[in-house]
Amino acid sequence: MEINTVLEWSATVLSLIFLKGIIQRKVWAWPAGTVSSALSVGLFYRIGLYAETGLYVFYVLMGLYGWQQWRKNAEQTEEVSLVDVPLKTQSLALLGVPLALLLGYILNTLPGVSFAYFDAFTTVFGLWATWQETKRIRTAFHYWIPLNIASMILYGIKGLPIYAGLMVIYSIMSVVGFIRWRK
Picture (cartoon, rainbow, N blue to C red):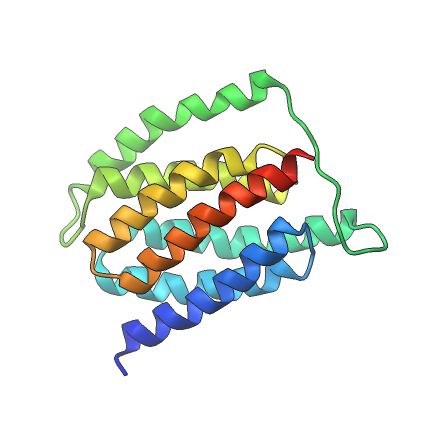
């Protein structure tokens, strides 16, 4: 089996474990997500999605941070409580548009880069959604739903059918997470 396929399948299985645990607000989800992200770093670098590579390096670091944050805030049941943030804080997400455009422009100058602007937008807003997730902010899934749909398209175009399929599942499960985190 080709190395890219092994990386893609391994990361996918661990990602599904991670998503199930995150929706259930369980601390144990973070190690699975961190290892999944580390495997994804290698895969995305190999296929020339450099912003995704950087994003997944960030996911590894945020996985460690999220695990620490959730462990610190977990109740006896290992389920964390969620927090709300003001609309003013949420509006900071709009800064992602010019940042994504700038990142896309920079990426477009690199040799072998694929879909620079598309890659940049999913990366920048993935950073925002991940930060919200680590802080247990209730609106994290508001961002994950469109991000997962966009990533499904990007991975499909790049010939990563397993990841594209994962993003279909992530898109559906993000809606479930959105509903469960609203309670």
